[in-house]
Length: 335
Ligand SMILES: [Zn+2]
Ligand SMILES: [Zn+2]
Image (cartoon, rainbow, N blue to C red; front, top):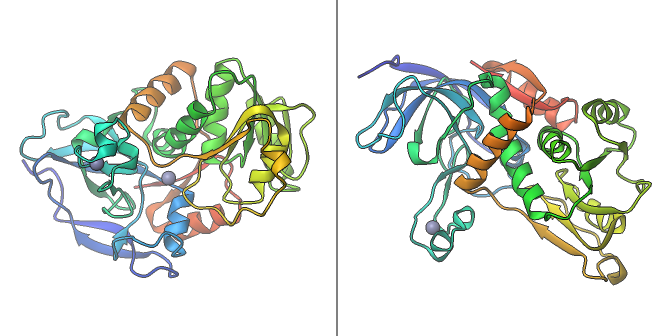
């Protein structure tokens, strides 16, 4: 059954370092195991900026960016039975894994040696339609509209995985970079009884006020030590100097989790900051289990992403505003 028009609008990246450009393309057809999604909303993620800037070096070009796809299934391919036409789904960054490599066999599909990623090595959601392997799609909780659901699919997921890897014994949680991921995971953490300390770019009083409105017990500049010692810190800003800053803010045996896919170099720092069994680790990609867990927790905790909406054609403006730190919450393209 064909429910989609022949042609669709999309914003394409032809070359790194150039703006994305409007294109009229053939609407893709779902292959075996795939679904065709009418994209209603697609989040704009910092990773998109890293791809545009050539900091991530293996994109498929030309490329439709976008890996926070929220939409409705309009057509299913052969052997795609998990979803039906009309289902509300989300398609995340993890678009395909091999199921056979040592990581897949160990339940670490986020590290699959042959993984394909939406909006990076597969076309993504800066478009009216997108195809996705249905096995990697999530059913969206009913009470989220598409634009609200979109940021959950990367910012929320990566934020949640970072939060989970900070450990159970966290009462005081630092969050460096209070944007899309930070403001979502803060809501999960507070719902679970934790205190949130929010760190922003120096002087960004607006974001600090936003964090306090959401319930952070403290908000301040990332260059400032918090008033208490933290149990763990999550870093979502791509700024390497935050690693020693966060280490200096956490207690012995505390964990610093770097949630971004790219970061500027980490400056040298004295061993004493790491001493006493402090841990620094990164988070890469997501597993499908992370996604199922986060969507269930977000719905139960009443997490409400704050979103700023842009039309598909305004993708470059959304990217520019994100780069300048001018987005409160998450930027989302709607079609
Ligand atoms: Zn694999
Ligand atoms: Zn992302």
